[in-house]
Length: 189
Image (cartoon, rainbow, N blue to C red; front, side, top):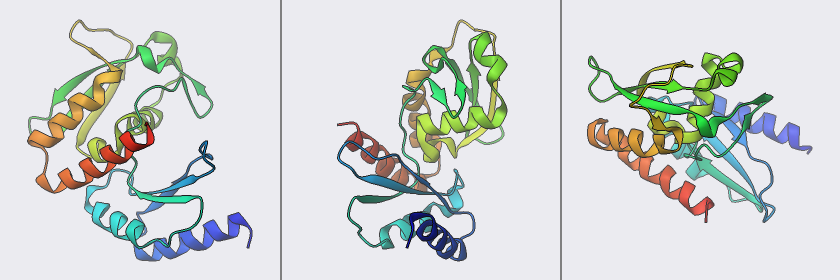
């Protein structure tokens, strides 16, 4: 059966399990493996279902099936067709006063990147950098080309936001936070 047909049949099966679950497939890694990441795009209510489905997946040669997008950092310079200087971005963590377990983000970008950026692209980039578990507790995200004096480099965003989730976020998210963090560290070694 050709790869596209396999992917379509698997997608149909897990769509019947939970229609909010989708997947991403990685490029081949240096060892020849590929990763199938099951995701609910930050919907914390379906994290358990995503994990259950990934754990039930059969073991296949050269495939790694994982639950939830892990934090991958902000080392990349382009996202899709957009060429962005992400390493120069900064952020300010905002308190979500009405939602004490959640936080907000103000992302500061160079003007050239501001011309290419739009809200969904920003959310996708931040999700790639900090993972969907940490992003699930972000109540508000904005961006601007203004630079404030109290902003931190984007490379430190995971450190700040994951600490926020650990201390102030729902305790039920901690297991997912540790699982995705451990997977991310294992892939980077």
